[in-house]
Image (cartoon, rainbow over all chains, first blue to last red; front, top):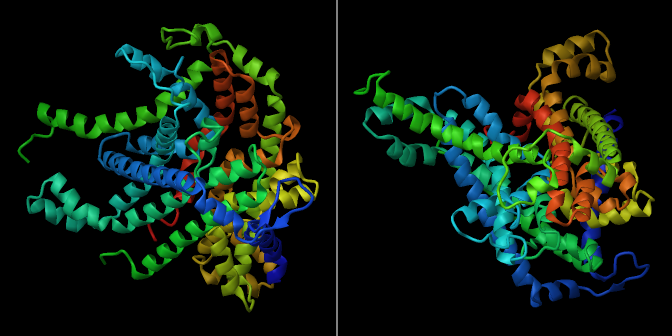
Length: 282
Length: 283
């Protein structure tokens, strides 16, 4: 009975989640052009090529900048928005839904909208800059600016998620402790820094992990806003470009995927270790 | 308490610390989306201009017409709908069956199986695209709707969420059904499912949203317009409209992919937010 109910799902998970992990490791040992009938086994050559060539610095650097900036940006702004939502004025319920909305929208649609806003010729941003006598920078052609642009849009799309999770955290803070602090004469800022922030640490840790994992998997916005990966080749995007972009280097792409998976695995293990120790004050 | 509730100073404080940040947050979200909608009605002459024209001259649907005729948008919309409806329905049913089995059916290796599902939850589909592409393309699934749907059907998220919910159901209602002689199948559909509708709705809605928005997999497994979904089709539109004049048409396309989910979210946001932020409070 158990198998009759669970087997279809378990078989699908095994075939399309677990089997690919093993296959990826196997493919990563091949010198193989996607679509070619034969491949040569080259052992660890793909990894050696990645780490000794220019790709390691470029791709890992881009990944690190993108991850740190998007995680930091959406968590800090998310916390500020959560504080704005955690007031007793009317309209907070609506505002809470509104700021969450971008998180569920198509990354492709959102990417196109922002690409138009950033358009150096006819975008709103170019018009605003002209208003103060500035030329619009080449957001898409300049590799550093294209990364900054994608980071900005990614933060816009994801900060609502952080805000809603932080808000839930803020609202579950023990009321008696907070009231005692305010009776003691601690002002809002003081109370926030020495009381709320430390008490929020389980929420902060949860968000740190989840946003880090999703930043490392970010694809839609990067693909639609920078189709050539000019300055925006994170690990996941590099793996895509190598296999399905101009090169068809399947073996090399697989090795980049394996490296990405290893990083995701390390983060997950760290999370589990920490959760056991509990980042708690209770 | 030195400030009287209705004094001018208190009002000013409420506006600056209460409403102002709130309004600012909402505006930052809505202005880009509003800009998308406004621009989707603009003619090339209203976009390719040095002066910014905020409002379109008329609400004409020319861009939508062009978007639909330049690329087969009707087909994309149909494909996206089929993929979302079929994919989500199967996933929800599979999640219900697996979660029920994990909670209510006796089986020797249940713990180990649950751990394997938990681990699968951590494996992002993005790292599996190449092997899955080779597998599905080898089976002849390239440029087919079943090729788009099949690899995503296994559901760790739905199973996990429903299992957590089923564990909270009172044992008594199931025991009563058991005494009445109802087998697992009847107990599942007559007892467990009817009392779990909110959780099932949460799983269903989160699944619908992610199926509709899914991009990387349909992008890889399709290269013919007939089988593309909306997000992939939009990429095609982007490629065909290189100059500034095409922005109006692309915004029309963006509206078509964003609006359905925005409407669903506006109506049922309670379930969607709960599903997507689950795990945050209980840890």
